[in-house]
Image (cartoon, rainbow, N blue to C red; front, side, top):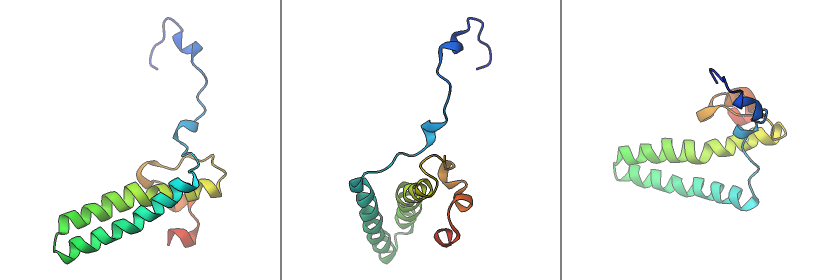
Length: 104
């Protein structure tokens, strides 16, 4: 907020910073994400076998890395830190918050 001449911001609740903390997944959500991750590996292999490099790269880097692996790693961080930590956007800070074995 740059300027509040009418003091409208005083009625807003105090920010808690919890809006960017991932919520706990249900067992079904977790299992579906893990299953989808391994299923997507078949698409990467299929595209590579067909010499379709751009679709293989899309499946690997976009779908597997950002849509599937990143949420799993964020959940792991939250489990280790009591569901109160905000992981960075697009994987920023993963090496800082994950244990060395998981990061390796």
